[in-house]
Length: 265
Image 1 (cartoon, rainbow, N blue to C red):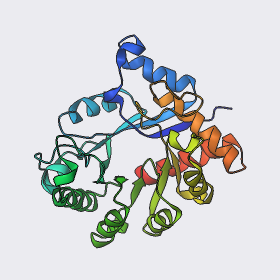
Image 2 (image 1 turned 90 degrees about the vertical axis):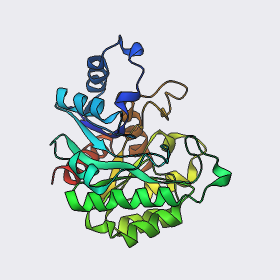
Image 3 (image 1 turned 120 degrees about the vertical axis):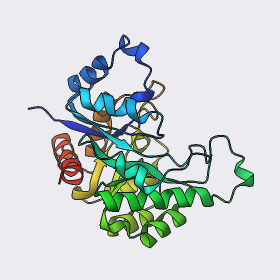
């Protein structure tokens, strides 16, 4: 019986296709061979979005998001109207990734930033998500308090979404869950030094759990050291099954069900 895993967050446009005989067909085929049935390809800037959307249009099991990553250059400004107009295609199912990252920013000196531009960009994404009815893909790094504060102030509970590549503490997870968000775990959860993240992964309710690769980054054990790809999400599912004391079939089923409930309701 096929497991049908879902990779709820990856960057297909960033993969080095030379490792796949220069063709996206082989990326999708390898995922399917590893029982990964559906993929969400995430945008981090507007320049790459047309290519991401083109891939989603070509492959029925690939969907797309649209947004500006918080680490993307502060000079690029986007409006609610612009974001909303880019979600009209049925292949676009989410807005993001968006959020806050106080750790590093492209082309900026982190010692000389107040990050207000980043917070304003985040608010624009939330407002566009509520306006369009598209769930949010949230990135947060070294900014948990401001991330949760802005989500509350902008009433993000009206639309919900995913706290992607979750690496925060239990209190942050509980706060996000209370606002209606799903918690998604990447390959980081499989790392030996990720005990605190594993504790969170054990407490997330079945109906709010998701898995992702964030490929081409963060390859899970036992693939650490290799470039990540959607096919590897199965290893995360297997790890979580063991961690949560359940079957791989159960993890595959609930994460798939959660994915479709969130994006295709």
